[in-house]
Image 1 (cartoon, rainbow, N blue to C red):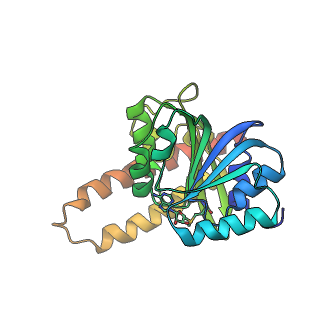
Image 2 (image 1 turned 45 degrees about the horizontal axis):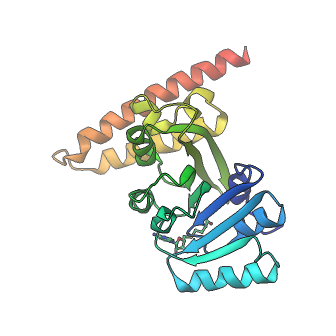
Length: 234
Ligand SMILES: C[S@@+](CC[C@H](N)C(=O)[O-])C[C@H]1O[C@@H](n2cnc3c(N)ncnc32)[C@H](O)[C@@H]1O
């Protein structure tokens, strides 16, 4: 389908055949429509907190004739999934900030097996949440869309990598070991951004110490990544 952007396509690839999916904050419902048309998911709940986006979703779903597979819901977050009649294999939370994600996750419950998160900011807080819940990071991907690098992670209750330390938390247990070109570029951009912030921030600012610590973590991860890439080239 031509309307699926590289970011949404990367999200769709993480859905397994016959999954029961919840897309939280669906807006236009492009992703659920693709999943329904592609017959990838068995059932999809497309939800939004606002009536405007949900009405757009309902109209799009009708015009693609997939209302038998997609059920829409006007709902805040995932509290509705606590009802035992719902069994959700994968819950997608994409296009909202990590604080909103954490708010939504305060209603995590046994009826949801796995989550897919996507943002163009940091997923550090989400990895920390996964660590505290003793959940696993199943996969991590970076995707460039419209000159923005998005981070996508899939978290589940059963198997994958654990978030073991601060580097895993900030940079991702899979991504920092794979060290691909996009990961290195993302870190270089982040390092430049941090350098500018640190240069402008007053010395007495309490955040300064923390920012310098984070920059050091980026630098050592970058150094290791570049060294490993050079070694693999030779
Ligand atoms: C930028 S759109 C993202 C659309 C789509 N998920 C994507 O990734 O392209 C964010 C949507 O999330 C909805 N939203 C924000 N907070 C929400 C919440 N707590 N529960 C459900 N939907 C929410 C907004 O109304 C909006 O339609």
